[in-house]
Amino acid sequence: MTDIKFYNTASRKKEVFTPLDPSNVRMYACGPTVYDFAHIGNGRTAVTFDLVFRLLRYHYGADHVTYARNITDVEDKIIARAQERGVSIADITRETTRIYQEDMYALGNLAPTIEPRATAHIGDMVSMIETLIDKGNAYAAEGHVLFSVDSHASYGQLSGRSVDEMIAGARVEVAPYKKSPMDFVLWKPSTEDQPGWDSPWGKGRPGWHIECSAMSAHHLGITFDLHGGGVDLAFPHHENELAQSRCAHDGTDMAAIWMHGGYLQVDGQKMSKSLGNFLTVHDLVEKWPGEALRLHLLMTHYRQPLNWTEAGVREAKTVLDRWYRLLGGRLDAAPQEALPPDFIAAFSDDVNTPQALAVMHDLANKAGQGDQAAADLLLSSGRLLGLFSMSAAEWARWQPKGAEIDAAAVEALIKARADARSQKNFKEADRIRDELKDMGVAIEDGPDGTTWRTDR
Ligand code: AMP
Ligand code: ZN
Image (cartoon, rainbow, N blue to C red; front, top):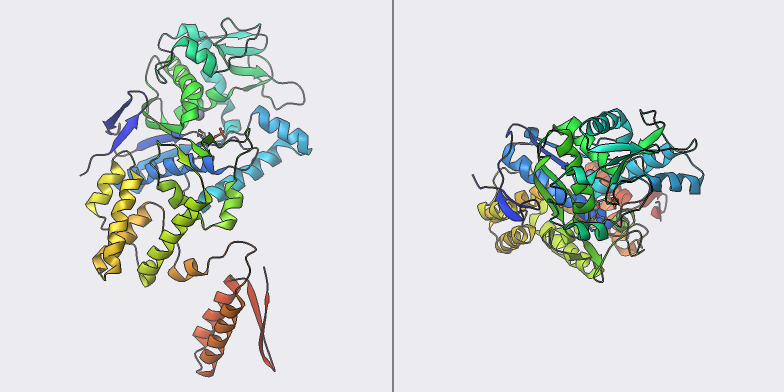
């Protein structure tokens, strides 16, 4: 069997992947803070770890991989947003989580095995913080608990930074209750109108980093196979997670492999909420089929920066138009087991999607010359990457929301339906009525023939 190789941020090398337990391969990716729509940069990172999940499921079996992606549902940005809008925190987090899950589904991502919510694991976090205090790695001060960075000699090892770089990178907050400016918050006090839980240090709430350490240990165990996120999370978030987990668990490593995805950029700058240069997944999936967005993401290797452009999405859509046309009725058939070895080799080599897509382009060219086996392999390869979820007819019919309806196409379908009815082929007539309905067209049969109107 082909080896899987992943680039490991911790060793700064591409390594052959050996699971800790092949009957239960465990991965964790840091998920969203749920106060606002996800942008396509967040979507890129989610797609990257969905690809890792799919690759591991292919190699070890779908029932032998556990993927946890957390939901951060307690955080200062959520509190601020709830106050701004005059709605409850629970309403914001519930609604945003639902939309996030829909958007990730629209991008072709499988649901993770577990989506733990921070607010459901406060007890785990409190007990981990108590352990860190007992072991001398954390201290309580003025209602806060802080992790003492000086207590952990290998702090900075994951991201490979010097103390000076870390201080600059973390934009450290100087506060009177900190022993050292690098120390970071494990717990902080809450006022009456802020969400809070009782704790040995008074009513308060957890810091962001402790959430992932506590939830991953709860669901995946002290050491698991793979931990991921966008490259912005390597420091300080993952460095802090690793420090907490190592210290709480007697020096045991948190994850065997750490993976970080490159930025999605606009005109050379990171897409982000704060720069205002973002496109939400929610808006994009109304303008483009989710698979075209996904294919645009897959065209660049996950560790490289990816420049997001409309021309790029259009190119991806054109490729899919051709592939869907080539595959036709095959898309309705039962899934194929066989996969091309060169495709699997590329996908297994640190998720090399550009190389895997090159194999698919070759297959498409052969399929275009009538090679049936190549068409089958194109289909199975695409399905493994999370493409080809529609039938050829559904794909052809897909329209952006609010698009003009093509009147000539509607008239042609109405005529085809009338012909089918006159031949007493009512099954076909009903199918055409449904097709029109999917296009957003309602028809009505009257004494002077069939009339239609838009119905969206
Ligand atoms: P956030 O909501 O900012 O905590 O981000 C959630 C996830 O999206 C994290 O894994 C981030 O690393 C990732 N992320 C945020 N912005 C980008 C971007 N422009 N490109 C790629 N990943 C991003
Ligand atoms: Zn995390």
